[in-house]
Every structure is written in C-alpha cells, then in structure tokens.
Image 1: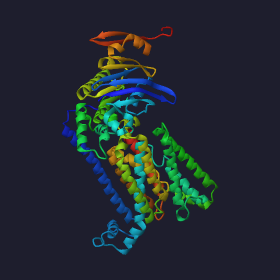
Image 2 (image 1 turned 45 degrees about the vertical axis):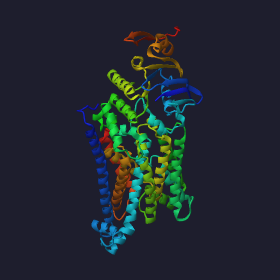
Image 3 (image 1 turned 90 degrees about the horizontal axis):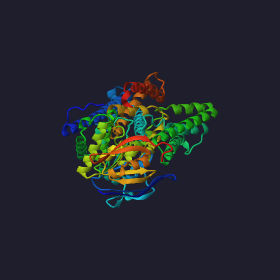
Length: 357
Length: 260
C-alpha cells in the first residue's frame, strides 16, 4: 500500500513525468556511450598493437580522411579483421535483445526469448542438416546459412500458426515454443549421432555460436535487416504497451491483439533468423538484456526497444572481448561465454530485485 | 449517447451462453446487471464492446451498428473496466492511464494527452500515485487507476465488470459514488455487473436480473429486487425491506431441496 502524500499540482505531475522520461533517455545515451567505448576497446585488442585512440582514428579515417590520420597497418587490421566481427556482434546482440524484449511483452512472460521459443534450435537443426547430411534449400556457399535461416523461420511459423488459432493464449504459445525447442534439439542430436565425426564436430562448433565467421557481406545483410525491422516494431510500441496489461483490456482500448501478436512475432523472427544464421546459437542475450533494461527504465516499449538493443549489443561485444582474450590465442566460443555470464547475472538480478516480478 | 442492445445472442460452440438480450440505456443512466455466477453477465458486457463477437443481434450507438466500426472507433466511444488486472512487468500509474489515450493518438503521445491524463488523475484523486508502480497499489487504488484509464478514453459508454468485487465496503461506496457522479456530470451511460444486490439497489437507475443466460426481470430497483425474484433466480430466501425508498435485501438462507 502506497501512502498518499500531499496533493501535487498538475504542473508538478507533468514535470515529474518529464523527469521520468528524461531518466530513460539518459539511460539510452549512457548505454550508447558504453557501446562506443566497448567498440573502441574491442577494436584495439588483438595480436597487432593498436591503442584505443588508433582504433577510433582508423575507423573514422575512412569517413573523414583529412581529419583523422592512421597507419596502413592499423587501418587494415581494424577494417578488415576486427570491424566485421564487432559490427556483427552489435547487430546480433541488438537483434536478440530487441526480439527478447518484444516477445516477453506480447507473451506477457519473463521467460520468452528467441532461444526459449525454439527459433535458435531451429537454426541449429537447419545448419546441422546442411553440415552433416549436406541437404538444404540453397546450394553452394550459402547452404548452411540458408538452411539455418529457413529452419529458424519454420519454427516461428509453427508458433505463429498456433497463435492464429481461436483461443490461443500467450501461455500456449510459450509451451509450443518449448515443444519446438525439444523437437529440434533432439532431431539435431539424432543427426549428430549418425553423422561423420568431422561433420559432427563442425556442427557442434556451429551450434555453440560465435562471431568468427563474420564478414562485411554478413554485416551488411544483418544490418539492413535490423534497419528495416526495428522501425516497424517502434511504430507498434504503443500497442505493445497496451498488450502488456492483458488481451481483453487491450481489445477494449482498440488494439487488435491477435494481429499485433502475429505481426510482431513475424518481424522479430525475421530479425533473429537473419542474424542467428550467421552466428549460430547465442543464448541468454535475448533473455537477460531486456530484463536488465526493464529494471532500469521500466516497461515502456517506446524506450525499452531501443535501449534493450543497445544493452544487448554492449553485452555481446563485451562477451566477445572476453572470449578472444581469456586464453589467447584461442578464441573461446562467445555463445558459451554469454551463457556463463548470463546465468549468474540473471540469478543475481532475481535475488536482488525480487519485487520485479 | 444512447446505447441499444438488440436481441443479442452469444454461444460457445453450440451451447448458448446468453440469448434474447434487449436493453436500452439513456445518457447518464446507470444500468446494473445482477444474477448468479456463470449466468452470462460478463459475457454480455464483453459482447457490448465486441471483445466477444455476438452470434446474433445488434449493438447500436445512437442508431449506428457497432459491428461496422473498427476496434479503434469502438474504443473511442466505449470504455471497459475489467474485474481485475495483473501485470507481469512493472508499469507506472501515469503510463497505465496514458494507455487510455491510445484510441485517440498515433505513434506519439502529445502534450495534450498528458494534460488529459493529469486531469483524470486529479478527478479520481490519485495524482499523488502518478509515478508509483501499479502492481504495488492496494486493490482499491488499482481499481481507481483502471477506471481512470477507461475515462482517459473519453467514452460515452462505460462498461464495468464487477468493479467492486475485491474492495472493502468503504472503497465499494467510493467507487460507486465516483461512477454515479461521472454518469451525472458527463452524461456517460453506464452498464455494470454487480454481485451486491444492496449496492445495485442503491446506485442503479435500472436493474437487470439475469437467469440462465436471459433477462429474468428488468426495471427500477423496487420492481426487480423482490423476494420472489431473488428466490427464483438465486434460490435464496431473503427479506426485502424498504430503506428510504430503495429496497434493502437481507438474505436469510438458501433453498432446501424439497422447497419450490
């Protein structure tokens, strides 16, 4: 029970609300700053000796050649070797986190994420099918990626098909997602059980997830996809807010609950599929980043969507720094690092902020 | 705004839940629906703003069939207060009430919308809770917030599904007074489901008693809330007294097996 204090005037309430909004914007700016910082750190670390300022200068040199000077070594190293990896990390982290935030909102469930809805498991199965059995929808160089992409979408289509049925509740959709997760993981295990040893090892490596396969092509593809999908989600952020208070109430406020749910699920699936097919399964970012963000700035999707994206990018690029430097020159799979870091972090948050749910 | 419910019928599969429902509500009028659990009160209320889609019959707002309106058009005219609301994630009272502006705004909320939220908060005397988390409020405060959200929609018709069900007697009266004043001042037509027959008697202009999915009796409180009707509908023997012109119901005991 919250005690009623002295009566506030209209202007005071509006001012308080503006401050409340201001805090959210401050958080977004702060996490952007953090992202730029972590971008510099990540670009400076590696076998070649480059300071963080060299890294920024090498990056900016291509845009403003007259203002920033850099060496050939630094420029090649940063642009050709490190930046694709960092940008793929940023886009993947952002996609997973935004997808998680939106899925948690529309399904009203703190457990929803691209991983728990089986989308990553589908991508893993698709990739394993290509690696082990050599079967796929597209040939050549894109066999694995194409397969991962298509099977990730197949999973979400199954969930969406269930969402379109009469009387589908958010709970049934979570259960459908978990069922899909089990079906595709066990199918992958069966494939691996009967596969050639080398292929099995390769598929295992693919499944753990990492940014090692980064290239500018992939960065552009996932970046374009992100740039197309995020605005579509932002437009619906009001409807997403309203859906958080329950289907009936949302309908009474004029929100077509079913249509929004199917629309946003399709958009987020596309977003996740188009990054996961390059990186493999990276767990926990999609689950943890939205929760961290929501704890700081609350559940208003107008701010939650962009802020989670930035937090997700920071977490993934940060985890990748860790993955590359913990036992150099070995690069530990970043998917394993995110799960290792994410698990305890989530536990800590659950203990610390109990009233959150 | 005049609301007319014309021969509405709703069924799940082939089992009729409600049928032959005809009600007319004038501006400023408060219509209270009562009846036993599971009689179709909530179903009827949800049919009025098309949360559920009735099988037959029509809902007319000033003569216009709402079937032909979009969800947003309906939301601009009909506000709905559900029995209870629980959020998984935290949301402030201000944001909760601002949601009621959704039918009127596009992507962004304007200064005017925030102004209207503040006005509603002041009207409901919960302005000091503006930045509190909805989930941490007491039941009475939550109910006021939900009513505020419906008011922020600036509706002509307000539907309430047992708005007093988990409130103590003081908050019950407070909420009912607020609704009564709103109906009188803003000309809002109110339809609500209420379990407490004495609250119904005290605040309704018209009481509708439902039995088995149909209207059993309708009219002013004195003509509907009789001990015969209460016996037939609820199977309860009650004494109905007259208290300053309104019936006052004292339930005695439920019907035994051999009594008819």
